[in-house]
Image (cartoon, rainbow, N blue to C red; front, top):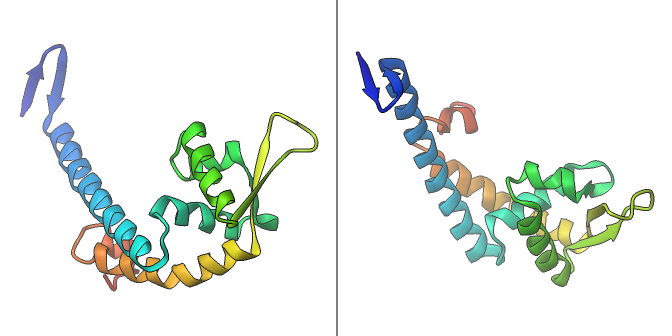
Length: 146
């Protein structure tokens, strides 16, 4: 079936893709909300803050350039800057200027940040497994054990 919507012609394949997108985005938002609740309750951090701690925990020297970190956690530069400011105030991350390029800044995970990440990781993994059970992406996330 082909439908004409304004100037755009939609096919049945377009509708199928749109349906999959609705399912995927609904699952994503539901899982993200569950992660936020679990991490806030157990460790007083948001899922976005956990994401930053996790990215830094696996980075070389536990450090990333802010411009490289922002797209990895799907935040704008300004949103990431505000989040990093909170993490710095909590002693979880250090922020410092790049020696070679004073316009660039690095975020570095502190020992306290690594301790919090290590403590919060099982909570995040458990909440991720529970929240993804029953959704299409669950099999991918949980290796078939969702």
